Image 1 (cartoon, rainbow, N blue to C red):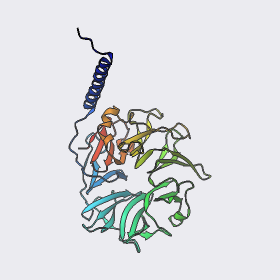
Image 2 (image 1 turned 45 degrees about the vertical axis):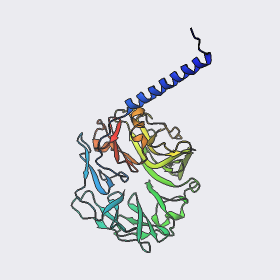
Image 3 (image 1 turned 30 degrees about the vertical axis):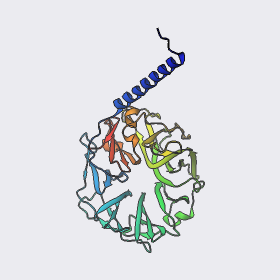
Image 4 (image 1 turned 90 degrees about the vertical axis):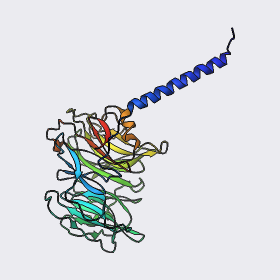
Length: 384
């Protein structure tokens, strides 16, 4: 009987083990794949916004989420579309929905219109042009004011319009590219690319008040205000930069208190939302989380989707960025669905819309080029 070399036998056994493990991984991946639906809202949808109980998104046209408080909730084209050939972005103030639209196929031929959701038959109001800067580039809502990035040739500036104004005005001493805005307490916040964040209770003095420690932390793109349920409902704001900086802001009456955490190789896409577990009433970090869009890292440029961040109990630091495991039934199905895509906006239908909050409240996510997604019964799929 012919004897085999021990080395050959070892190689054969090793190859067998390798292919067995590879097959197991393939079978596991196949089992984790979900059958994707046909998307109702294709392309690269805008940020998802809510104004006076109405939820909107745009992808070319304007869509509203109808019957949000029922099991029949679904997206449909809004009956009153704004002027222009394509909607580029959405923003909201306390009482108005704002749209940035392209008027024609010409470059930089954009306009901004606003609309009162509580007067559905009202016309869209043209907000005109900003003085000396005719080209609208971006819009961001903050409290009762909308900010716009504007340009004239290769020069960039910032314009603003409060709800009691019917046109834009240039922000005093402004220059640079606006990258985000928010409102917390009585203060307006605005971020300028590579210049940091500024905050003031008056728009007139906004750019004279830089927020300490933000000028060297990259470009901040997302702001979110909420009442912290694990800290006596303390009003809180968080903001993130594309370079991986996370800031938590509170105010005890003596001034802003800022806690900054830098996540090294992590990158944030700018999608940011507060999540409440519909199935859990207990005030624990398992039931309250922040959802943060991922933009890959120095280690893995293909790492997309979003992170979960548990809220800390008390007035503590934010720590872990976790793979989705509480918002989804199985991380594996998330990883083979939304986890493959760049998320630009994420939003959970608020509890107020659902009354007692006992129903499953979907999460929606806009992606860069891969349509609108939804998470229902803790499973992500294309929203149909």
